Image (cartoon, rainbow, N blue to C red):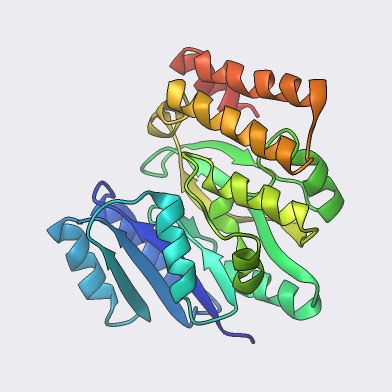
Length: 267
């Protein structure tokens, strides 16, 4: 099978025990990555350094260190440049992969030379994985992904595997607070890249109240307006429809935290 890289960004606030569980899920894959690129986005704790030192003994980890925190988009852009292989799988440092995730995704690329990106569904849990909160399903076909992208993010970022050369050609990751991935997918759609989602749950994600808190407030609303402008520029949406979608997306950011939690739980 074709070799591939895993790309992650690690920062100081990550909990060492969550990071270790993430690495265990990589070790337990039925198809192992050929390299694991970890961008240290600024200084990290001694405990996180200890986890890295432990797992470098049995996983093909390559560390790229940044002196200061530059944000997820900029960190991933640098990481993508430093990946060795054409195919790159994204992973967040506090999530857990399904054991067959990479094998399933590589098979899709081997069976379709036109494929640029493949993602899948996620299951969201509370922070210690004791309670399942929700399952985020995404559209499967390229046609449905393009339609869905007008309204919502059509891909679960932590599940994707993609052709890095095509992603770089589309402009790679850029800084866009909370929405680096959605921004990139829109540019990929504008280039008519073939993207699909698998029907399986590929990643188990830590959600809960801490995640909901990040999806509120004025900064999130500013990012929504920036996203709308990108959709309009790329002709993903236009006119009154685009404004309606913007309003539909902004309103939840103004909701009380408890209501927003219920909205995400029942989506």
